[in-house]
Image (cartoon, rainbow, N blue to C red; front, side, top):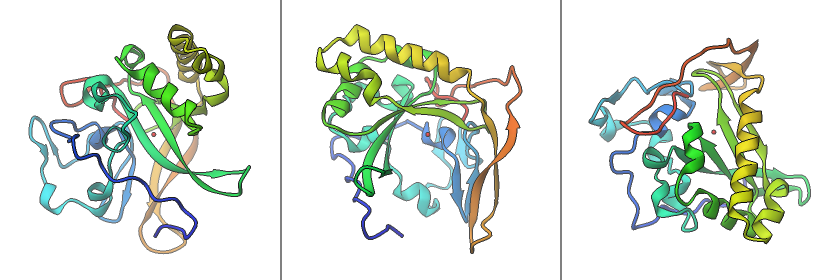
Length: 224
């Protein structure tokens, strides 16, 4: 259930559709009672070239999910995840300053090539300029956590001066630093507080050399 003070997420835009994009079927950890998977691995119901094999009866988690490209007008049209390798996601973020939840945006770069995606800098700049908390997310190896950091303070000056090259340079530097992160294995276990399941982090560093894959014939990563 949504908490009483939690802000509502916007509905999907009428002029954007998932089409053949299946990035969310790979890039996300799913903790539904009817479906569990860790990020970086394809959903077991995903069929190559056909999409979801249980679309009409898919779990509620899948039915209710829309990526930021589907929801946010200021995310450029060319940034559909399977085309761009960039996955925008809305999330509810607890603000220490105001003591309540607020809408934040995660920008997951599924591959290094995603830094070159057309419209990436402009979309991030729009969010930062509007005062939206923006987090850069870099996936670890399949089955492991992602590295993430809020970027608003880092890119504020570049956004203010409309320095696109400077903004992209900062993103590239943060991406390189994140790739050296201490990634941990994700384990899905029964929720001790009640029914259902919950994803937990195992106290272990990811092995070097773990591989990435692509999904949906475009720039997605084997799994924020």
